[in-house]
View 1 (cartoon, rainbow, N blue to C red):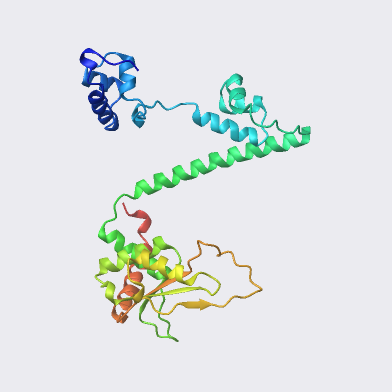
View 2 (cartoon, rainbow, N blue to C red; view 1 turned 90 degrees about the vertical axis):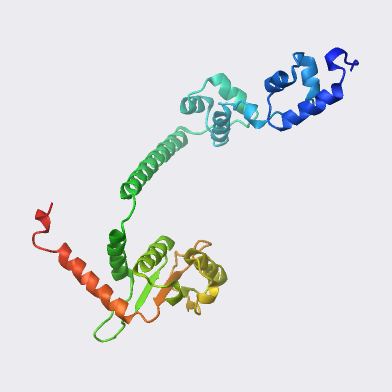
Length: 290
């Protein structure tokens, strides 16, 4: 490089300032305007070796299409099929996948079977998208819960999943069992609403003996936001070799049992609340209410 002259004589000083600006996220244009360097060769020398900031890199709109085209080609799709599927030119498809091996020729029956499979996969994708839209719309329709709404919800939830008192077996205590973490969270929120202190709650895991017991205990401790010392001894379910279990794998965490200490009075109130809900819901004039 020739020695700089004039206002570029202090090249190293300018480079130091240019590099600092570059590392601060400046574009070449911004560095030019900041340092008054209007010679492009000098400007490029000043920032040589410094990568441009991410925000100056223009995204390639065809990157996703290219990746999809390569995936389809590896699945055995022809140029015509990829072109029709992605809506891009044949020349682009050829450029993107020309280094990949040509798919094996299929018989008409195989091609028809593959086409039917693709149509079904597309139909499943459309159905799943509609399913997710329905769920999201329903979720948004709920909005915020009032304390009374949570109260009534919790009573129904307990009567569906909690233990009940029987004439032949007195069980006037609040005990709740479920394997769904979202249900457990709602139940705990309901107990909070009722003013039940967390210190009165005892936890116990019920799980098959072949599962990862330690991982399950840790999982439920995180869900309930409590220390594992609050957990009683885990109840193990013996494996029946004649039974084909589906609740297996890393996602299997068993059930969580929540028991509220000194809760006989609370249980009686829950049973009374449930009777009140049943009476209100089955009133003869229910259909005429506005």
